[in-house]
Length: 241
Image (cartoon, rainbow, N blue to C red; front, side, top):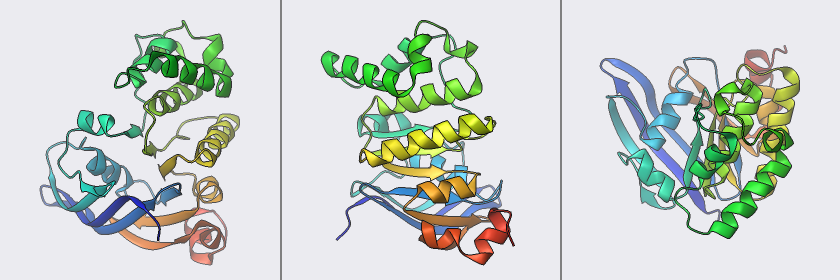
């Protein structure tokens, strides 16, 4: 039987009278790379923010179970200590800190200096550009370099679950390919990932399973390979008839 890392049941999110998420069910099992695709405004980012406790004032209902325990209403800083990490839309790097300092911030819950140093070297080997610029302020990096840094920083916490919110947004095609190469590599190392992504084709090619979200509801789910070949998914999200 698959081990649930994340299980969402009947999740509803409302901002006043606006229902942004309308009772969705979603689960992510250990070692899986799951993608949540859909048009802008479908409720994908709101779902991630409900998981991580980073929503502004709103009403959240339903169950959010992480590693078997409810985390609905938990503070985001508490979740980091429980090895749940998120790379937010827009990346959110500490612009006035260096690359190296950003990576150290990702490891602030750890006290194994040798392990932290080894992990920094590891992610420098994955992202050579970061190593070349380790003393550079993060705010001076390109969008793609900041995305690399945000991912490496999140991985420094050794997450049981890594949430990625639109990692390819605003990047050049070459950089998008690099980011997805890293996502696949991290998944192959056994890190459990929930990926929200506008590039449905690349997301489904990388993922094990997928969910389609439309107007706050899950309208389709299944094996990612099957969804890639589904005419309705192709017509709506892959630019194919």
